[in-house]
Figure 1: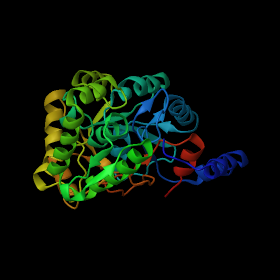
Figure 2: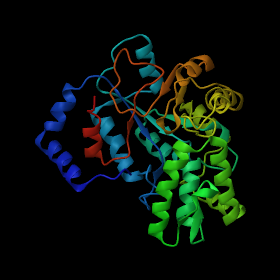
Figure 3: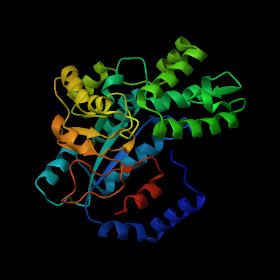
Figure 4: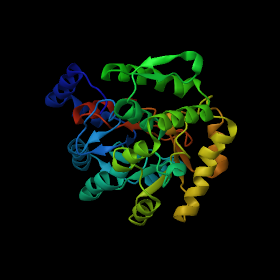
Length: 333
């Protein structure tokens, strides 16, 4: 879960206790789209599980939405926007990004218990490859699998970072993630990560991913089963590349156009929606979204959804917070 200070937690609970939160919710306009990532029995590590939520908290979110809102399929909300109609303030749509195994098992079960519709965004090019999203792989590799006292910087002239202790590994990981995300071309980024995997033992590392439902992706068979049950599947890119200057035109087209084509081939139906990997959009993204045939594209910009919203950049709220904090967060305009 995202870190929240004790002061913020107390302030949000006080808003609930005084009724201020409920009154503010009754004045809100527009609907909301929520996005979650991993849903785990429990969150074990604040960095490895940063984007995850524990099952009990997720259940409390769903039960609150059933009591106080109206959970609608994402396609229903989009149809409203296509007609340029207002979205009722009670409406909420639930999305999950990354197509992790725990989403199609733990999360799907909790959503089914409440009878709620939801959507799942799939990094199509990674499904059934034995690999996971690159940021998950790097976190797992550095924090739990790297046995050496130092780790090379992405370029030889950059030297090495200390990884002799848990604190060293966390500090090194923060630097590496930031640099790889913003400064290293996609091909070089993947070659660097593959080199680290080879150095610490490819078979052992990929075996760890295969055995860990926190990072293991769902299979095409599981995704087809979800689709048949009524879950809307969205594209989440080809291999979850950030759409910034590190990703060239060919890779960008593969992320947007190639992923839609592959999902159409494997699932019998091409997705109507695209969820931006990392929430990042390039200047070329909107045109590629339209050209590929998507109806809409989801960002991670936290804002309520109102008539006139740009279908190629629809806002969403991250859901991985305690319920009282999430309620306050959903009032952001």
